[in-house]
Length: 390
Ligand SMILES: *Cc1c(COP(=O)(O)O)cnc(C)c1O
Image (tube, rainbow, N blue to C red):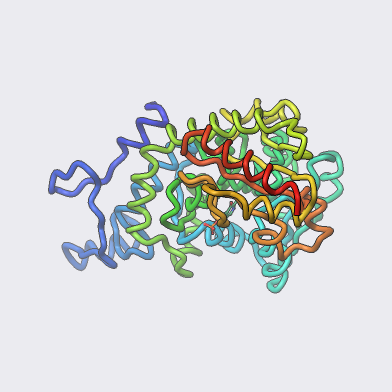
């Protein structure tokens, strides 16, 4: 088995033009040699591309690469991460089913579970990671799915994937893990028993803030069910975005190494700063699930959070004083990014919902980019200093 880095570079779709870099296949459909070949392809008797809503050489290449990285058999590329979250749930559940989910989730995933799926009779309950024993009581007779995010956005909570795999097995639940923050380079949930792994490819997989994309990966039979849904509902990834994402995967490993190294250095340097109440980063000893992070992740990832003294007003002054770091909701970019979750990505949650997942008004999320770590640190330190007084 080749290594992650090699697969990410060498898995390739080729035409007969002998191109070295994969070509971009901007074609909505593909022709057949004969009426018989058309019939056989539609009947799934022979493989091949029919129509770009179903498959395309560029999306096929992307899926093959990510499957090699995640250790999964098949996958579907979607137009955004949210299309992947939606598709993985909507394709497998039906009216009357129930989802058990971890409480600390990406903002839109939380909206999906609390405000979209209930319209179609699919309900959700949230479990807290501080109390795994209580999850037994949260399983209902109609619970079909266990939906988790680790590390979570932006709480950076780490869920025990070994526990999750065993819990899902014991209760006959489909385990879905959003692996966006870690990427398959740092963590492979399928290894611990996840049936589906979902991604926002918009983040680290692109890594340069250019395109939206998502992925759903898993065992063949389950992916076939999801594929039926996506094929007929149409959240397909565009070939151009797939081409960008596949090129980006070639450098995912070296980018992640640098993101993680810089984030750890920053977290260690900023911890204990008199103007910061708390620095949270999975590979800091002070992180409540530090041991678990060491067990299931290769490195701590590129995201850290700072809880600044002085609440909302201080966090906003800090953000306004930054000279280099971008103020935008994206993450996983080569450019460092600051986000204030309470007023932006998680503003649709109630104050109580935010408190329960550790999003205080003074919390800022920093996606540590690929600039020189000393320049990132300096920008943060100067902004802390100049935001001390109102
Ligand atoms: C960004 C993000 C998503 C949604 O992805 P989009 O590509 O923006 O639709 C889902 N989960 C997590 C953890 C994310 O960070």
